[in-house]
Image (tube, rainbow, N blue to C red; front, side, top):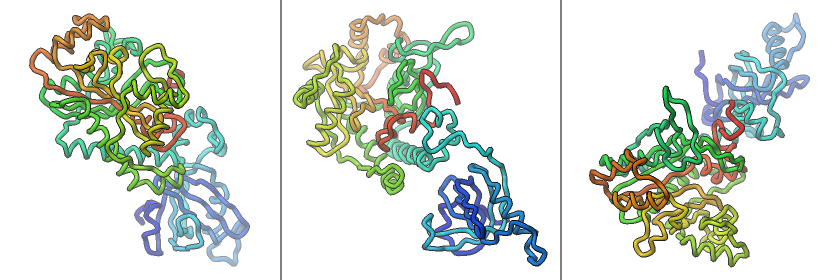
Length: 447
């Protein structure tokens, strides 16, 4: 049997016998010729049946082949999976890749029901209900090839730097961030919590002497939000490294990873992204602008928008406004907002020596949306305990975590970044529902 060929490889082959398999995307059943558009995981190709014969013809010696083939093609439904053997022909007049296949045999492997529940104009909820069908779209296929390339580039950089990949547990005995966003689950005779982030375990690796580490894994937030950028389960990109002087070291690594990832994506998928998403992907120059949060608020105010929050944080519109300023002033889609007030940062963020009200932390804004938080961590046990008390926390409840710092902890820092949100902004999609393989939100647990 002829070996199956991926559709993307057909253009590079010489004319001759070929075998392809895929899903029927379109059938044009004309009187004397039949056309089928077939799509596999790599692309689409036009199939041609020029030997149309709808009734047996005693004078045609191939009648017993042509009639069944014609009937089979006429009855094909959208999404039916077929295997076709035929003659590959290069034809520059064919818009779909410049090649076509003259059908010799067609085998229906699995037949699809005639009424496809997903149409071109189906809304996002319908498409998510039938996600496996939605994922057949070329745009969705590209999303996850982009994701693969992006993560591969990040991993290459980490590994080149001697970082160690870890997998941290997602069942925890206590909160890693805020109890307000915890999912509680039954755990034998007790209870456990789904991890909001690998933060404590990343820091444990620093105490263990691992130095630079990274993880790409699930995180969970019991956030009753229906915005385009929130999910109850998401993929978090995390890294932590030892022997840093300040959060500037973390930012330098962060922007280096971003540039490496976007460079790889642009080189491998740039043309397809332009074609399918109409996005001219840009690789940012380093260094990214760094703007202290207080200064960013003044810039935003000068643009006519005053952040209305009661706390010291920036709001989504403020993020969009500062991103617009940075795009105009620096021509980049990325900006670090730095020096966040300690009142809105976790107890483990290091304070600024000159102004203890500020932390050595940052948010990374991409195209007007926050994608990451990073910081230098506090590694001195006495300071860490005092900062926990300042937050109204009892150090006794942080026993296992604080033990990391009692036996020698180097200076360290890191960040966590939402993968699905990065992809959403990179491809200019309206929601992370488009860039998450199977989205989870307050009202979605299926499929």
